[in-house]
Length: 252
Length: 212
Image (cartoon, rainbow over all chains, first blue to last red; front, side, top):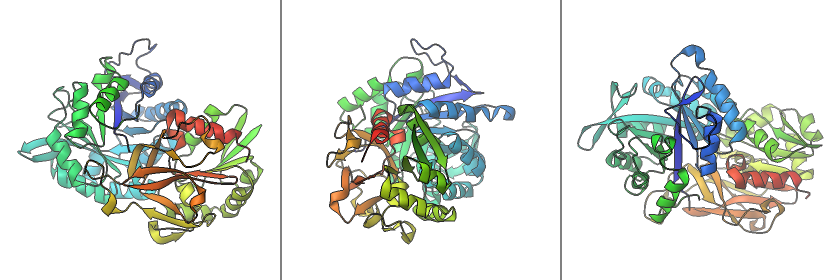
């Protein structure tokens, strides 16, 4: 049976991992290669890098990070943040990314999803959707970290990008992100049930049961978390052991 | 010096395959190449592929690589990966294109009406993630890899060989499908060994020492 995936997410700023990664015995907690290797050793199924570099001068640094990680870590790598055109997608894939995620650029120009999928294949294209609840059973797509509303309904947008050729959806609840209260399971399930491509649940994980809930109640195909793993509270292996104990198929 | 050629016809990133082979095989020269002469000079050949099979077939021919690929598939250790496996067959439903006809059989899309899991939930396509690979017969490339080990898959189409004897592994996803085929000097897999952690590295290591 296909295993549900656990995906640690790393924020990278100008080539360094930020958000206080705190592994025991790690020489340099800011080195993306070391952090990625540690997650690989713990059994992470994929790793996602979110490039939050603000300065455009430093934008190419992420390419070197991806190159270095891909030389040493042999699991799938997804990279997002600042992807604006098909050339950006190509550059990241050539550096060693397996998938590239796009968010604002897809909202501004949905044709980019189709163009990119047409050039590099749907399997490489992830559309990241940041959603906020606006009414019972209704969520709206936001961009710029939840500041800008788009007027797009999250479920309809997910269906649209899937039809344009996205291979996967990274779905983040802006209501839950950073709260540690667990995924927005209603949002996750509504989107997952509405589309035939995989959905990664994100935003709000505070304990290991939240990850399992994302799969069992939210029907997510994969779960993404950052802080729960970064601060050394839990390892990926612990998460998988708990998920297996709750009857979820995992790679252990 | 063991020389391996990774055939580059412009479809996707081949760096990961090259790095994974370098990682497992010391004293190896890895060339990522679009030059038929390099393919002919290599001791072993890796034939990868990403994206859509019609594009892959077109780009292969645009670079004049078809004869070199067919020659390698006849006479040296040959590893097909993902679309590189699919292209070895006669025909694909994806874009209704002919393949290289090394093996008889069809490349099919997962049937929408069968994509239901044991729990009744819909199985998503692409089939993306780590799934169990069940070995159907002994083979040197399975050395030190447990039966049922998980490998990383990402695909919407799979090969359906006419000759069941070439099936080296199956995986279950709504239906049982062929995950690997083997015949003489050819081994070809739908999953990505270069992205499959220890199991994948072991398979690549086995390939690099394989003497068919």
